Length: 549
Image (tube, rainbow, N blue to C red; front, side, top):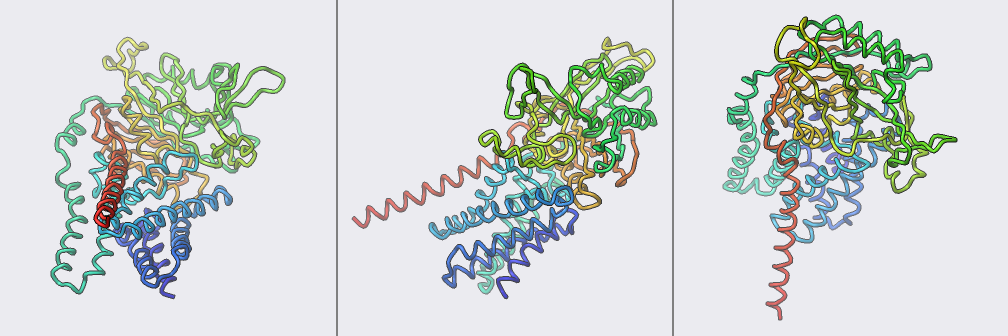
């Protein structure tokens, strides 16, 4: 019964502290303590370690289900895969640390849970089964005032903070009866807990925040939320790009003015695939191109399902065209139509496993047959070779009426971030490193229904704003659209399942934060920590061996 209670308590605390499944954030600082107590109990009783793994897996499985159960709304099989595999990976990480701590058995090996977990999260963002939703640093997306220092560390810094406090609280149980040590530990825990919050609230570099406020270059945008049901309308047999285009144009024209520079439409706003180099040949393409020319200054960023045709195989996503020597690839794309009619495409690179990416299909092609059908295309989509930005011309002189092409334009860069990509801090910061001055997230969160899923997704975008100190404009087909300033503060937020649009003026930032320049450096520090710990262990072993001789 004690085992049940400890495993259940740990998962409950981690669920209740996660954004929008409770949002009682302080609970996360003690969420791992029951698991650590459970481990201590097993070690003291002499039970076999693999039995601890069963209890640990049960706890992690409940945590995954309790926070991301809504994934099953889109795909039951995909949800089960996400819950079970992610829980298994977490169990292996926890078990690896437990094994190392038992073998080395020093006060320093106990704290090695931190670097081991950090390396797990770092790697989990970078392979075919990537599922970074439960990265511990994401817990503070609803408490952005606590983590303004993410501009230095990214979310991995938040993960380390959580684990350190949990380990210190667990240690407090051991020395609680020793008054002197107890008081010392309590002050240490309070310091580790409160210092990052104080830094976040008071000591964030004034130069950075001053630059955010004083940056003079601005952009006027209109954000669209067309609210088209992905199950019954968007990918239905009767769906029409022409009808969706007319609806989007009408929605945009509610707010487009002489000063509007950019209109943003959501992911797959054009859901029916078309050949990228033939947009002008389609009626809906002609309507879009014509409308952009009619707008005084506005350019259009829109999500689309697109196809590229090639004379040879490009990648694992390439499919031969029957009875020809040509190949095609399908993409989930962002398309920028500018005033000079130049078309710029950027393809989604961080794909959803099982829906847009068949894991390991590059090595095991037969796996493509198990792709999940979730609207649009299925199987592995084509991707960019590296993160990319889009360039937008903004007039710097004259009125909207006198705008005549690019004569008085200044070119700015924006980061097109498609849905799932917005969870990856390192991916977004690479776009900023390449010059992006504005983050534009286009997404389609309607697959999950009215659940915590779309709320969490919106919330995570606040962390991208802090990490890069960029404005975020977020256009969702369904779910929530909005604008977020460089401090992670929500400026505008639309209602769920509502057809609407809004205008927002943002400042364009060109400076780069420490995180933007150096990325997920806590992972490198973690690896160094582990290598140093093992080198010290083996050196001590060798020294003791020589003494025995």
